[in-house]
Length: 541
Image 1 (tube, helix red, strand yellow):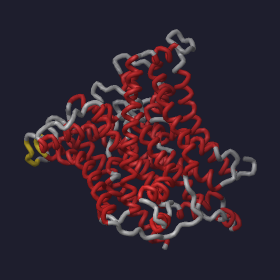
Image 2 (cartoon, rainbow, N blue to C red; image 1 turned 120 degrees about the vertical axis):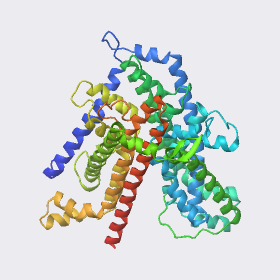
Image 3 (tube, one colour; image 1 turned 135 degrees about the vertical axis):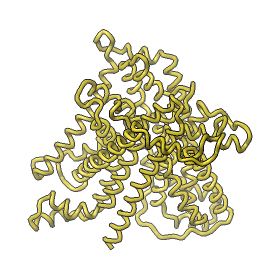
Image 4 (spheres, rainbow, N blue to C red; image 1 turned 30 degrees about the vertical axis):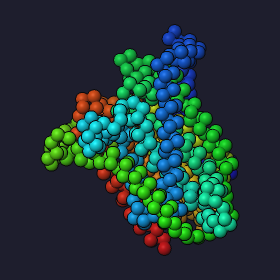
C-alpha cells in the first residue's frame, strides 16, 4: 500500500474499519457468546444442551426438509421460465410478462406472503370459495413450501436467466442438424452448460428458505423451523442469549457448505471464445408447451398476491365485497402506522445512499487500483453473502446492547448495508472492470487527482450501475424483516416488523394496506431508476 495515493489509502482504511467493526467483530462476539456458560466460564455445555434439545433438532430437520424440497421445485420452475424466455418463440408479450411479473415478490415483505396465502387458500380464502372446499392444509409444511417457492423463485430465475446469455444457441441448431435425439440435444447444449448456474440456484434457494423468518412467522403454525426457534430463544418470555448464539452459529453451517458447493460447481461452467447471434427456430409443440407452463406459473403466483390488492378495498373480505376507502383512510389517519412507514422510508433511503457509496468505493478499490490487500474486499463480499440476516442482526444485538447505537436507525442501516453488500458490490465490480483501464493514467497526465478522475470520468460512465445498486439496496431495506427483527425499538419500528406485530391482533386489513404501500413505493423507486438508466444510455449514444 506504500505506492498507493493518499486518498486511495484513506478510502481503503475506512472500508477496512467498517467491515471489521460491523462484520467481523459482531460475528466473533456471537461465536464467543455461544461458548459462554451461565457461571461465566467457557465450554461446550450450550452446544450439548442445544444438540440434545429434541425441539431444536426437530426444527432443524424440518428446515432441511422444507428447504430441500423448495430448492428442487424452485430450480425446476426457474429453469423452465428461463428456458421459455431465452430458447423458445413463445408469445412475445408473455415473455415480457414473465420478466416483469417474476420480480413482484421481491417488492413485498416475505411475512406478507403468509397472509396472502391464508387469504387465498384458507377456510374463507379466494380459491377456497372458487373450488368450494379447502384444497389443502396451509399451516405448516404446505404453506411454508408455497411461500418459500414464491420467495426464492425470482432470485433463482434471475441467476439462470443471466447465465443463458452465455449459452451459444448455435449449438442447439447444430445438434438438431446432426440428428441428435431431443433429450441428448437438450442435455448437451442447454442443461450441461448450465449445471453451475442450476447448482447455484439450488443452493441459493435452499439457503434463503433455511434462514427466512418472515414466512414461518405467519404460516409456520406448529411446524417449527430453525428461524422460529432462534426468534423464540431471543424474544420469548425469558430471552436466552447463549442459546440464541448457538442456534445462530448452527444456522451458518448450511450457508458455509453452500459456498463450498458453489465453488465446486464452478468447474462445470462453460466458456465460449465468442458468441454468435443465432435465431431460435420455431417449434409448435415446444413453444406451446413452454408458453402454457410459463402462463400457469405466472398466474399461479400472481393469483396468490391478488388478495393483497383486493382486501384493502372491500368492506369485509370475503363476506362483504362492497368497495370502500375506509381501510386505506384508517391507516393514513393512524399516526402510529404513518410513523412506521416514514421510518421504513428513512431506513431505506439511508441504506441505499450509504450502501451504494460503500459498495461502489469497495469495487473501485478492487477493480481500478493496485492498492495492496484490495482482494480482502472479495473476502468481505463472500462472508456477507454467507451470513443470514437473523444471524447478523443477533450479532449486532449482542455487541451493541447497552451502547448508544442500540435502538437507533443507524444500527439498522449498517446491518442492512452489510447484509445486502454482495450483489451491489459485484454489480459495480463487473461494470468497473470492463471500463478502459487507462482513464486514471490519462487523468493523472492531465493533472487531475484520482478522486477527480473518478468523479469526472468513471462515475458518469457507470451511473446506470449506480442506479441499479441504489434500487437494489432500497427495495431490500423496505422488505427485510430477518435482518432487523432483533434491532428495532419502539421508536425505530419499520413496516415489516410492524406487520409481525399486527398479526397478533388479527389486523389483516392494516397489514395488506402497509404491504401495498411498500409494493407501490418499491415499484416507484424501481421505475424511476429504470427511466433514469434509459436516459443515461440515450445520452451516451
